[in-house]
Length: 250
Image 1 (cartoon, rainbow, N blue to C red):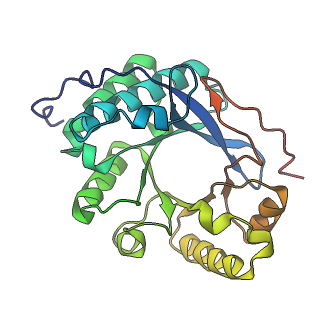
Image 2: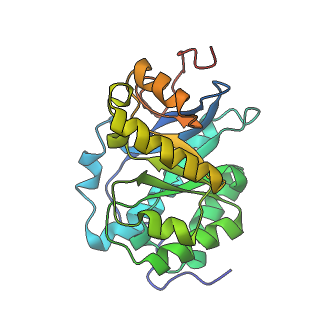
């Protein structure tokens, strides 16, 4: 294991308190919960913006470290390990200086709480300009350690097909703008259908996020997507796990 980066203080530099909500990602075929995504919230359940507005460039690393710790600690307390759902954690590529050094606190937290490393998904969004070589290094290192990897908001950002051609993550999450009103939009149906076909050919599983209606869900089921996330399934629950009541398997 590489030594910690100079200046690493285990996230202590970010002094603003925050917590997490969890939103389930559901297996469309079985109706079972596949994972819970950890979403940043204020300590009173306020939206993510109330916290993110406090994150300066200088605090990005510390905030990213604290998010990992908070997500794992809460998940270890909340998850039913007999069901073994995954925990999906968002990370900031620009906050990772050297992958093996910057993962030190994550590994220590998982060990301390007893949360299994092979049940963690690290997802990053492609909505900011990134150094592709740096991102590839992070994703490959995380896979070697035993984490699952995911690209979030695919189809809306910078990395896209170029990154996918060089590294195939375990999961791709399609941007919610592609999902909105897909039940009545033939263009979106064609685009998403072709993306799903391509990703399955690459052995990549597909999550459709931002699903808000059962009509959208039915359209996505017809396109053979793997997982569903959105208000049609369950809203995020603050420091708790949401109940999924929609009969997805029916």
